Image (cartoon, rainbow, N blue to C red; front, side, top):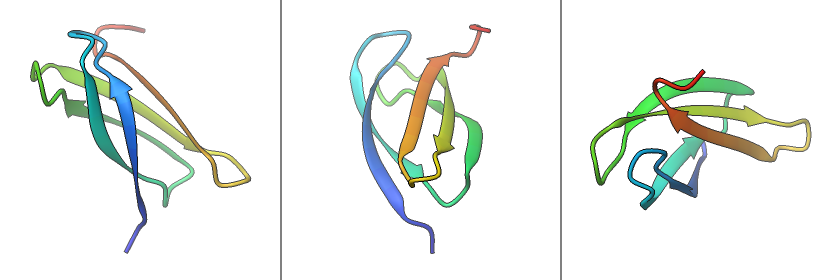
Length: 64
């Protein structure tokens, strides 16, 4: 079973801080999860570096 890491992120739409669970079992991931406050789609880009640290960025769905 993969480890899940809890992270706090700010929604790119409403600015609210939300808590999300990140699966660090893959070196790179890209997925969409709805904001728990405003329900708009947030794009999550997750990368795990060679030391096992999780690098997380979030953006609005319409951002490049």
